[in-house]
Image (tube, rainbow, N blue to C red):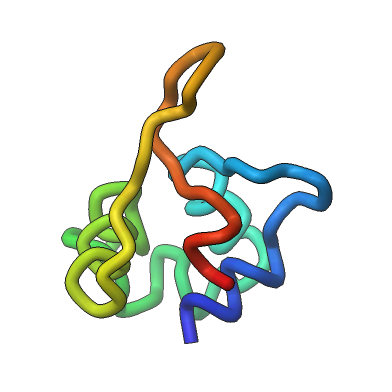
Amino acid sequence: MIIQDILTIWTDGNLFMPSSQIVLALTEKWPNKYGEKSRWGTDKRRGITVQGLGRILAHDYGIKSERETSGRRRRGYLLKQFQ
């Protein structure tokens, strides 16, 4: 389940994680599940993408990305959204 996988790769101590960092961590830890040869993402040759992650989480789990409240204002997720 993608929620459990996200919690597994979540960086300790961070309350916010950018979408791009989540995608990178998922594909590095489970290349067969989320990488180029997986069924994820809009382009199955690339694996899961930031946009694909957003669609899956919003559609299947009702979890929508947020913007960082300070700093670079990247889009991503709060840890509490997955707990």
